[in-house]
Amino acid sequence: MDDQQLSQAIRAIFDRGSPRYTTPSGALFELLRTWAESQDLSSIAEACELYICAHPHASAFVAASLPAILVNSYFTVRPGFDYEKFVKWQAEKCNWSEQISLSFTNSAGLAAAVENVVNVVAEQA
Image 1 (cartoon, one colour):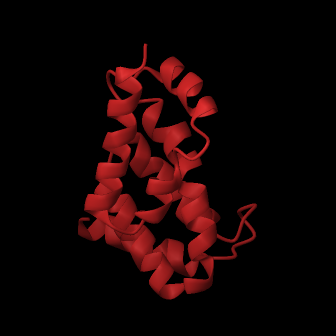
Image 2: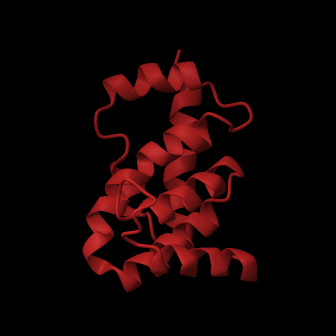
């Protein structure tokens, strides 16, 4: 995470509960969507870690929300990712997002969980 991204993450921490968003973590989620679109999983995990340090009570909500953010803003734009296969696969694999949720504050863990999804989907007929 560079200095500009760190500043953005800190701003999201302070913007928790802002009426500009429909959820208390809206500022963070907006930031995570931007970084997901640019395929920056490391900054996503680091921002989540900072956010949870400041707002530990939000941990479960952020962890549960990250898979949807990645579905809508990461997988849809990832080069070579077959989103149609993903939609079919995830409908059958109810717990596919668990590893993402468990590793949301760990850069290496999040990258591994996402890469596992990519690989499993690629193997689908």
